[in-house]
Length: 411
Image (cartoon, rainbow, N blue to C red; front, side, top):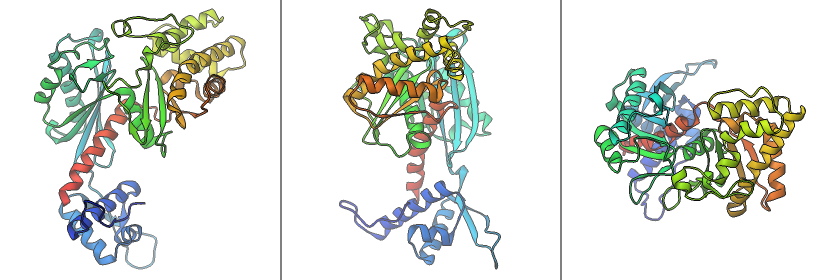
């Protein structure tokens, strides 16, 4: 529960600094609880009524809070209620894939106010930086228009992509299947085209952020998220922070050599490695046929794999379905064993459509297999953020930075 703090080393306890701390504590409480009265804010922060009144007047004058009504259901006149002004700032998030770009805009409270999906015909719009810029600006403009806003109303944008931009070179790595994004000029051209600060993050890292803020990893500072959808990847959260690695490639476990898959060489050129071939979405149809599963659907690998796992989990006692779930759980645990043996996390979140479609049935099988293959025994859970988790994570990241920036203006 946020409370005002005394000055710490390097932060003198001046009235201005203490006011800023109290203001931020009150704004965080309003974001967490919704509309609150002056008395309630004073009680939660430990501030006196006069100080709470001055604080709210200051925030209202800055355009950060609104008087939204009065309390009801009690004797006597109702107390005025205050809430964060949702229109004080907006943030946006994008999820870039080879075939589709999803975009969303959220107000300062985190409510999504505009969405847009941009299809990428044939999986590509060109191979130069201009195609990546066009994808980002068109998708962003679509979401902004849906929100009834202008591009300049967005304070910050976070873009999620497969792979990661190498902080040393500025070039996208580990995502050879993403046309148009490998030009050395792409980040500079995007910066020129966009009127707001923009941050680029690995898509699976953003899913982990969404789960940490809103889902199955709330309250956890050390966990691994295993993602299986278009590709197989992981996000590593250590000490409460994303671990990205020297080149941004931490968690690119699709390239991981594993028993049961041929040893792949030149994986960066091939775009995948042993673990992806063993347990990625493309491996499920062949595995299902080998184990006698019938009625295998056709379509994109992620959709087919999710359908196969979901159908098997719905009838886990049927012979072929049981064999499929057990074999797939072993494959998943084979790669996870290497991860948990090195990191020893307290929690592993299974996410992405292929894994979440298996629900608790698949989770329990993977948990049992992992306990046989690795000495550490983390708890496995199924991810809870199911609706466009990359976009949700991008919005959460953009909102955190936007709130810091906007709230600091009260000082």
